[in-house]
Image (cartoon, rainbow, N blue to C red; front, side, top):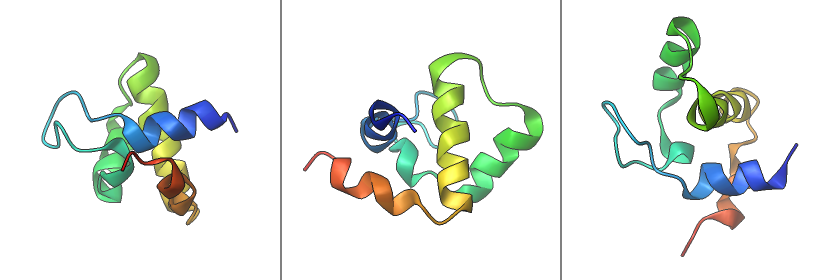
Length: 70
């Protein structure tokens, strides 16, 4: 797993939609599952959302906590 992607999940904000402005790491799992069913957006945002869902699903989202900006 690319550590840079974990840093992006911990610091990047959702650029659009219902949760615009929320950190990607903090998005509700149900929202990420909805994207999985409908299709993740193209590009980096979609990759970050998919990885966040995988981390949450497997109980590993805590790995991004040390990477959050204070």
